[in-house]
Length: 134
Image (cartoon, rainbow, N blue to C red; front, side, top):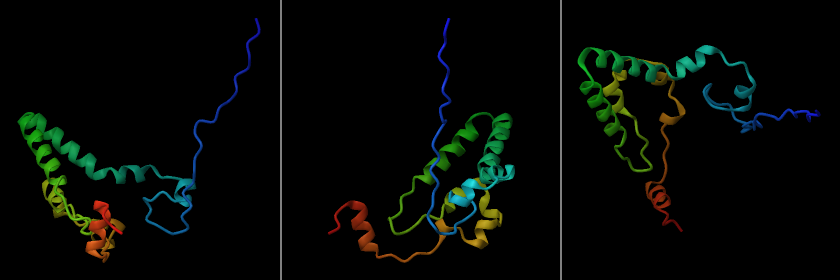
């Protein structure tokens, strides 16, 4: 019996992000998309979350489910604190709850882009976020 041959289908078309600017090592630009990615990069990107999960696992084993659940709810509530659109959040409450306020890391002295100081017109930003700009 005749069986038609199978065509090889491309899995996914990758679109390179060609912005033309040099960014942080964690940003997805052309060079970072084509370059060899070291295994430690993903480990370092998820280090804080992984450490938090390990601490919650130890707490659950030692204290029961109540303490990690309460701490998770406190962290969720700290993330929900709203700011005006022209004031970026420093995530200080989340840092205090997770214990990151006691450590000095790369982001503390090299100033990541999301923590950069930017001066914008407060009224224009609020009007744009509410959709009432002219």
